[in-house]
Image (cartoon, rainbow, N blue to C red; front, side):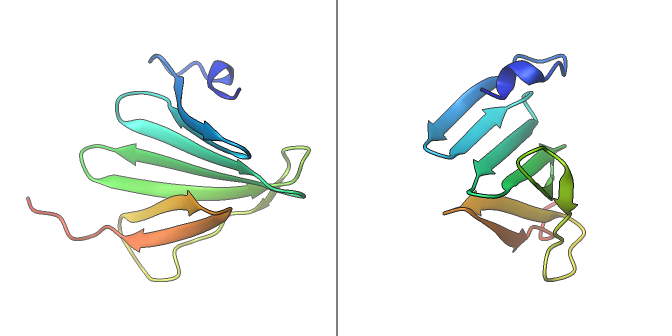
Length: 97
């Protein structure tokens, strides 16, 4: 569904889709999760290089930005996923260099 909207130099493809949830691999190091709720659309973009970090956005049904949720705890590398129609944040700052 959404994978064909992106021209990022990779081979975007749907990794998982069930009901209103979809996970799309954009490149080897970037992915997008989308959840289409009754009145809004949640989008989480994650990029790994090599440490992963996410940003989240909430849009209305016309794809107008409503909010840019932030991690509830300060984090250099906030990691987000969508679980059951909600954005779940994880502190991803622990990294073995």
